[in-house]
Image (cartoon, rainbow, N blue to C red; front, top):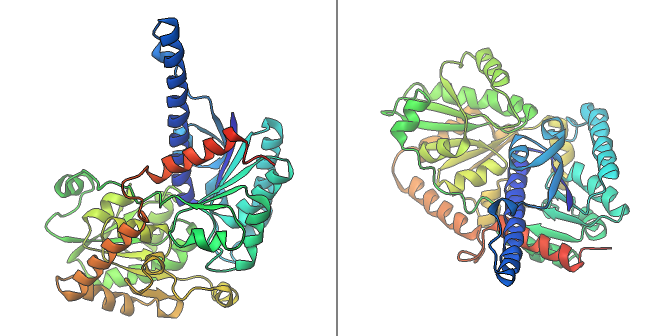
Length: 409
C-alpha cells in the first residue's frame, strides 16, 4: 500500500514521523499475527525476517519523516512560511513544489493521502487527491475554528476523516458536517527527558549553578527574524545571572541563527542546543513564540511568556479574521489566561522582563501558573489517559477505514 503524506512545517513533520512509525508498527504486528496463525496451522514457525511492514510512504516532510521511512520528494523547509504578506514572495516556488508533489502522486498512484496541518498548502493537496479518487485523511486538522471558519466546507468536501487533537475540536467540526474524531494530542505522551541537569549542562557547556531561560523564537526563518530581536533585548537586560538556551528547530540551521545572534552581539551569551524538550524541562522559565512550542512547554511544565510578531500589514489583514479571544494554544485549551500573551505592540523587552520577573522566583504567581499548566497537560488527553497513545489511535483509525473501505469515494 502506497501512502502520500504531506507535512508543511516542523511540528507537522514531527507528527508525521510519529504516525508513520505507528502505521508501520501496526502493519508489522498485523502481518506477524497473520503469519503466526498460519504457522500454527502448518506446525511450523515463521522466520522473524519475514515480518516486514507493507506500507510505502512518500511526500512532503523532513529529516524526521525520512528517518521514519518516508521518501521525501518535497522538503518541508521550502514550505515553511508564515503570514499573509510574507507568503506572496514565495508563491511561485511553493506552486512549483505543489505541482511536483502532485506529479509524483500521479506517477505512484497512492492508495491514500494523509495531510498534516499547514492548511494553506495541504487543503490544495487534499483537493487534488480527492479529485483523483484518492481518500484523504487530515491528521491534526487545521484550526479553522480560530479563523476563516468558512473554510470548514473544504474539509467537508475533500476529506474523508479529520483526526483532531484538541478536545473541543471534535464537536466544532462535527456540528459542521465534518467526519471528525478526537484522538488526543500527539505531544501528550511525551516522556520527561531522562538526561540529568548536570549531564545536560556538561553536554552543552552550561553553568549548572545558574538558572536557565529557554528562548524559542519560532520554527520559520521569517518568524525568527520578527521575534528574536525583542527576545534578545529582553535577555540582554536580564543579564548574565541566567544562561539562555535556544533550541534549533529542524526547519532552521545553526549558521542562520549564529549570524542573527552575532548581529545583536549575543553569540556568546545564547547557547544553541539540539533538542527542545530537555531545554524546556531543565529551564526555569521560557520566552516562547506562539505555536506548538507553547504546548511542549506546558507538557514540560515550564512557566513561560508567549510572544509573537508579524508584519504590520499581515496583522492588519489577519486580525479581523480571528474568531477566538486568545492567541496562545495553552490559554485556548484552558479557557482562560494561563500564560501572558505579548503580541505585536505589546511585545516589548520591558513587558517580557516584567512578566518573567513574576514567574522566575518562587511565589504565588509561579505556583499558580504551574498548577494551571498541569491542568492543561491533563486536558490534552481529553479523558483518554488509560487508552492508546494518540499516534497509535490515529494509525488504527486510518488502517481500519482503509481496510473496510469507508474512506473510499
